[in-house]
Length: 286
Image 1: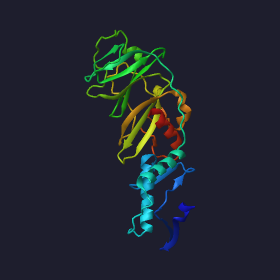
Image 2 (image 1 turned 60 degrees about the vertical axis):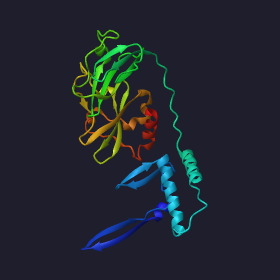
Image 3 (image 1 turned 120 degrees about the vertical axis):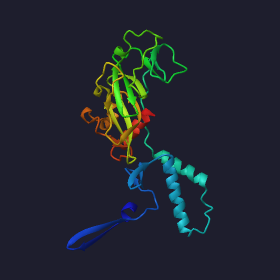
Image 4 (image 1 turned 90 degrees about the vertical axis):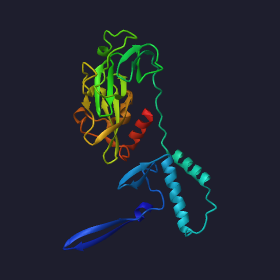
């Protein structure tokens, strides 16, 4: 195999201690992993998985470098047409990509909307607002539902919808339910069986993803609470999403238990171990 031919071993001895020098030559061809599904490159001292447009550009660059090197850098290669070669590479890559078939989402009827203004004040109303800071639909026939306030500071507040809307008439403005001095990046109205997807980045620039069961967040009386921390020090959330429990089997390994909620970053997005599950999850929340 090409990859194996690039690795050499040199066993040496110094001061009665034996050691081995492992040398890996740079490849002029893509090195594929997992049956030609994944392509990895070295970047900033770590492995990075690439696909889509970045993969096309990387392969094209390597092919050009290989041809230029063979020509001594002095001969223009007329046989390589950038546009046609790039299109061909994309076609090959797309053919290699696994097809992810997502189930059709169930049809739900909206009962009313929860609408928030920039100062955190809110109200219930039947029609979708044309001017507001944030709004989320509340669907009919969904039983007990939880409102999740997700913050960029890395904490989540859960409130039972029934308590939030108790004695609140339609189109009746209410005081803020946000943590004082902070604005949520996302607000969700979800069923307790759902999962919260958290994508984060740490101080090393490593992007990770994990899921927590909505039931991991104990509902509080008011949304103005501080909330539960969901990431360790040195990590901050990039985005929040909600996925239904019916897809649990597709991302089971990415679910983090409640007792590790504040200490686990989750799985790196470039993980080779769970890349299929991460790819499915990415398609689901896209």
